[in-house]
Every structure is written in C-alpha cells, then in structure tokens.
Length: 323
Image (tube, rainbow, N blue to C red; front, side, top):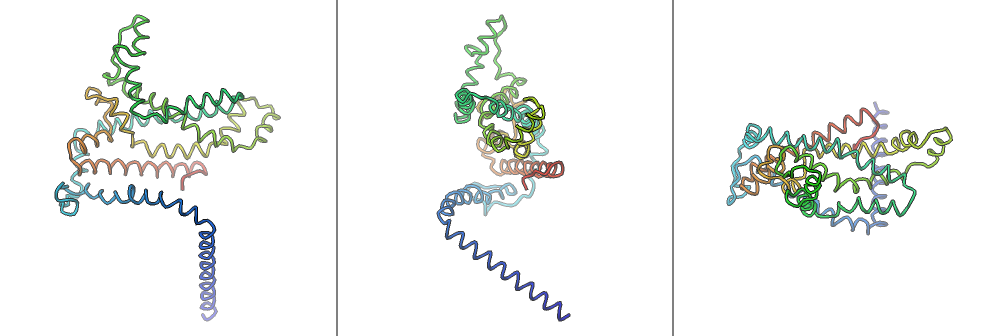
C-alpha cells in the first residue's frame, strides 16, 4: 500500500512537471511568434461578435417574441414554432425542394471541379492553362446579382440568346423562368458555371503534392495516361475529395437563398421555394422573427446531423475524416 502511494505520488509529480514544461514551451512560443498571434485578433473578434454573440438571439425560437419587449420580456412557448413549421402546409414542399436542389447539386456539381482540375493538370501549354483557369475562376468573383442578371437576360423570352437560337431553328420561344419544371436545372447550371472553376483550385493544389516518381513508376509498368489518372492521380487526391464531400453534404440543407430569390417567382414556388427563402419571406417580409428563427435553427440542426453522419461513414469506410 505504501509503495502504491509512493508510485501515485511520483506519477502526479511527473505529470505536474510535464504540464509545467508544456506551459513554458507555450509561453516561449508565444514570445517568439507574438506577431502571428496579434494577426489572429481581428479574426477572433469577428467570430466573437458576428458568429457567437448572435447565438444569444437563438432563444427567440423558443419564445413568443415581442419586438418592443425584447428577448428578456418575451414569454417562453417551448417548441410551438417548430411544431407549427413541421405541421404546416409549407414544410413538405420546402424541405423536398431543398433536398432535391442540393442532391442535384451534389450529383452534377460536385464532380465538375474534380474533372476540371484533372483536365488542367494534363494541359502542357502554360498560356492555355492560365487562360482556361482565368476564364473558369472569373465567375466566382462576380456578384451573384450580376450572375443572376446575366442568366435572366440569356433566358429572356423576347431577346434572350437561348430563345433567339430556338427561334432560328423554328421553335417557339419559352419563358424558362416562369416554368417550374426548368427552375432546378437553371439553378444547378448557374451554380456549376459560377463555382466550378474556383472549386477546382483546391484539387489543383492537391495534385501538386503527388510524388512525380509515382507517375514514372506507372509509366515504366506500361500504364497509359488514363490508367495513370485512375491509379495514381485520383487515389492521390482522394483524401481531399472525401473532405470536400463531407463539407458539401453538410451544406445540403443550407441552399444559398440569394440566387433563388433573384431567379424565382410566385409561379415557380412549387419547385423553387426552399427553407432559406421561406425563412426570408416569413422573417423579414412578414416580421415573424420567432417563427423564422425556429425554422432556421431546424435547418442548422439537420445540417449538423448530416455532417456528423457523413464524417462517421467516411471514417468507417476510409481513413479520412474531418475529426
């Protein structure tokens, strides 16, 4: 018993010394690189004031919010607003549209940056490669308002380029943005055009980290260009693909409402109205802040569940995961 007590005491002292050494190393590291830590201050302040501080307002999702009484004086109503949304007439349609648009974006939009990065990786001409990269990156830096305006003009029933081409071939002009069956296709194509080039940057950076000796070994073994891509390139960037896929799954429910608001009309609500646009209309236009907060919180919880699920599956299937 006495030996056991001495052993525990020695272990405690050892841990205390180890913690003290780690603390001294942290202090020394801070003194050497204090300029880098100073640069972190603006980002920390941004997250404190614009990310974490607004979370205080999430409690109005569980209250009957009174504008002039404020959060503190508003009475608690529990899950009343959540029940109203889940049992309401708009839940099934908005939830279905959100999932459908996100699923189409995942199926058709997610692989495009990968293919683009693989194609650019095979281009030998530096001028051509830079020209293609510039042309594909540029739409990302253009405002979504401008992008939506271009799409509207292209699809205009009077003088839109698409309808001009249709009429040249003897077809009838179509007002695409007033047709619910065309809205998802238009939204997905616009998203691919705007973001595929910028999304390829991560994969291009990942491609640069692949050991060239692997390509040489595959070439010596008789592998042609396609086999080298399938057996060397894609496995080399697979961890990056998995991480990006997990992040994409986490954003499935969080469909960007700006582009949809700029494109949709009441006649296309059937296929265009998603949870985020519903929150915009209910919260800002109808001033039902408590109900809109509850819907937005529901959206965030579903996104969190999707991220955890995708990460857990990835960790079981492969060795790559976010955490």
